[in-house]
Image 1 (cartoon, rainbow, N blue to C red):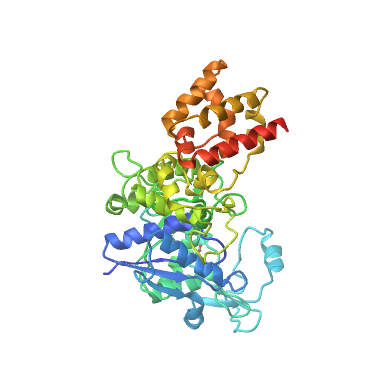
Image 2 (tube, rainbow, N blue to C red):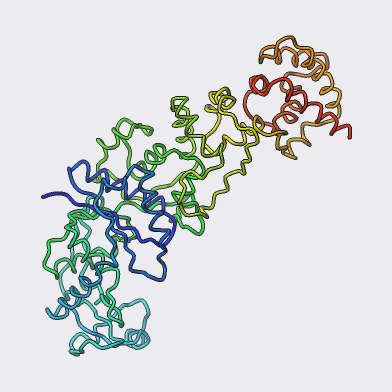
Length: 479
Ligand code: GLU
């Protein structure tokens, strides 16, 4: 039997990090079993679908290494509508489903509760299809349904507690539960690996598989992803869009590694491991069914490590989209919730950037931070951070800047070492440690209070621009 898995997103919003995790798990599972990964876009909710979300799915999958051409599909659920209707009809013909004209209020009045579900009133009324009548599946009255789940063992559901659920609406359109099963059957899916939130659907869906005469798949419901308050990650509250992380400058490799740790760990307590190790070691039956905490701080730390591990040429190349102001992935949906700092390169010069790149590589955790670290090198005058300015430009700063200008101006050689020695001397003469003496110089020249090592930065910036900025700051303070 060839293993066939599918990733079945609905194109109703940005690509959720939890979805990315499920996609990767499916992808690895298929690879480990010499199987096939199918992409199926579940686009039957016409009111909520938007074409750009479909592009977003393809782009996001590509970004995490699931490349177009290396999987089957994309198939579109809407294209299979005829089969969904035919299956509903077959279930009706075979007596496994019946038409129902009960209004919700009537059901509630009979059961005395809105939570009790459908009471089977129309089961034996023999109603025929008619506009406004829903088609309900006749669930077994006795016994239980056991699903084989690689993550959760064999959860068993009492059939009596499964209501006669709707499989086609009053307008004849099949609902998600049925469409999803019919597609899985027609696409020959052997393993359904998906988020835990679909577990309650599973006994119903397995009953549908049985009723349609096909052996159900093996299931794997991977844990829900939660925030630090243990709430399910929500797009209204949390940063869930994969695109947001990409635009902020997370590396795909770091993201993929981190996503795979949501509910699973490689051997020997390792966390940062090459993808080849993950592909080899990952096991669905080793996934912890408890909710998995998406820890953005940890992801940032991971990303910093991945950035530091890049060969310098790769780091330089990876920074380019942010340095040149091009979006990381052109064509991706906008509105990812991330503001990449505005970047107006005045005089961007690859050689200048290459000179400071190794210094920056050790300091940033996400690639977008590169802009704030190096923009002073490419702007005519630095973008001044007002708070940093107020803090650094204290009483006495004018005199300190004055002395620094004179000392720097007199240097025979413009090198980091010489600049440092000169400022040290200026500071010592005024009873200031180097850190204190540096503060106004740093803000005057770079606009910020933190950043790359100062003297190396000044060396790269050059004497003319450094002195011009120091003089401008002195004038600004003296007014
Ligand atoms: N379209 C469903 C979703 O996005 C997936 C259902 C499934 O994987 O079975 O949640």
